[in-house]
Image (cartoon, rainbow over all chains, first blue to last red; front, top):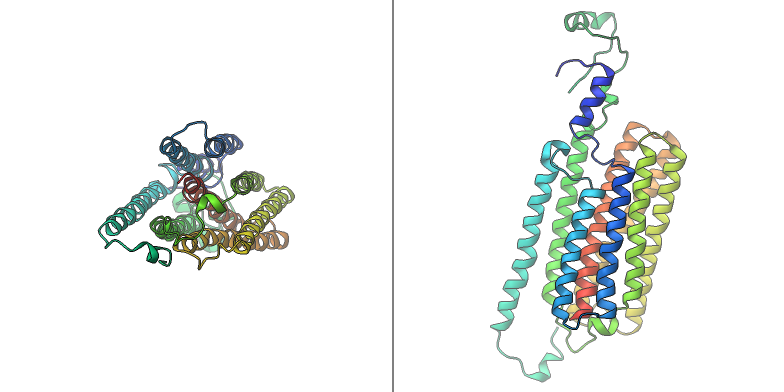
Length: 129
Length: 221
């Protein structure tokens, strides 16, 4: 890279997305406000049960958690396509895929394993680990 | 990467070849702290965090598999106190933004403000761990010990792994407070603080998973 003057260098650092890890007051406050809402609503839903069906509440709770993880990633962790030449985003997405495979895969396999097991006598269930 | 050469008699040849617009008597590398070795550090630390996320994924998966194995023991609805969990969630969320304020104070080099916000964050982190230990204590007193059922084993290992991470974060904050006190906000300390910030915010993200999948969905079940 060629030699730059002080002002050019500073501008270039920001153009490269080197504000990674810094963030602005606005992004932190916005992230905090959104997180408070996205935390308070699921707790309110589960603690007061305004909707009768637990399945519907569970779906809402999971959606709110996913949204809040997104808010934290953008506003607090400052992941974007520019930071570190896009490698943080790539690593993040790859981890997301592995996370999904590990958790959903384990639950899926173990659920089927459980349903294909020999039925246990009721007396034994109480002592099962 | 823009490295400006130190201008001295021995470096004169290089400088004249490149025709510098203005003389600079230091390495600009120190200025662009995220670019040089810092750039590698930040990305490397990020990859550590992602591998830590995979460790948590394994713990979440095992908890998910065991989450209905009560073995005739207590169920989540009987033992979890949601107000306590809500309090802990609030503490961790506020500690996330106080760390953000520390980062904002660090940028222009306000040492006192950075230290104050870091101290607030550490105190909030310590109260989070305190509330969690209180919760564990009351669960164990009720007989809901880790060895009682598969569900409780999964619960204690997942939640205490997160608590252990928060404890490590508090130790790291204290170490950073000492280092800032001794050397001020030098480039190395800024880089360490940015890694610590990522670590702290990452723990808050993991906690979202914990309070959703362990506590809220557990009580709904």
